[in-house]
Image 1: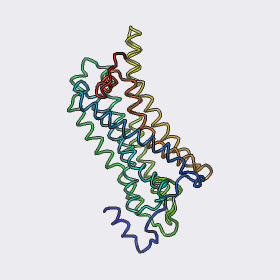
Image 2: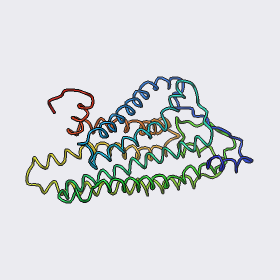
Image 3: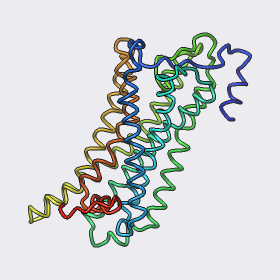
Image 4: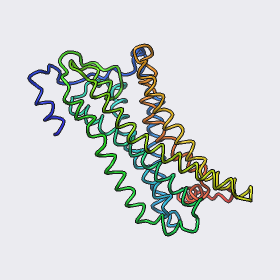
Length: 320
């Protein structure tokens, strides 16, 4: 409703009532072949994350802060993938390329919210690992169920409010001629590039939000793992050090992929006119690959979670 009102306020100066999502630029004639791997990734993301949530819910042994954060991450991953994949598959399978302005701005907002929320949950998980490894005796009194609830509420409020200005500013632009977007989803800069007026405020606003949210999150994560590494190096037992580091390996892999793609997206967007397919493809994959990989990496790296998964599935596995 908010986006509809903003659009209506400019209706007298706008000739555009909908956008056309063209898909992957430069490969329109055969892009439908990409629907199969993308659909499989989406299905994997849904099933794997639902399984993670189910296992953590059913197994009382997993009712611990670390697994609570993991279940929240799984729910966020489901939301992130679902925000874009149904529309992308509809484009490829049914040629449903049109999207109304309010729907486009709503998708833009949802994408920013879920990406920021995932970043926030990574911060919570990094703090959880820091306290567990660097302050093990204080862990039960610091990282409690109350801590999980408070951290989740704070992150949800921050990540719902911070991106609000992105679709609001986009909705205030005047779209008076072009409406074809060379993209599979409603990205802020892709949509506002069609506006007939100055869009510099949109670019500046997105840059500020990215640094304020993603930059601060990444800084906290780096600090947490720097302290973890420092504590691990002080351990006299190499076995204990190896075990401590192994608990963080999967987390680091996912974090590196998540933030590396964001950096690459930021860099390649400036070269969009030369290699438009790369930023568009990365943008889509960034919203579907982490949701598909997160549960698998955690299940493979965490013995307790893996054994609980076998138990829920009714598999009689006696080994690791």
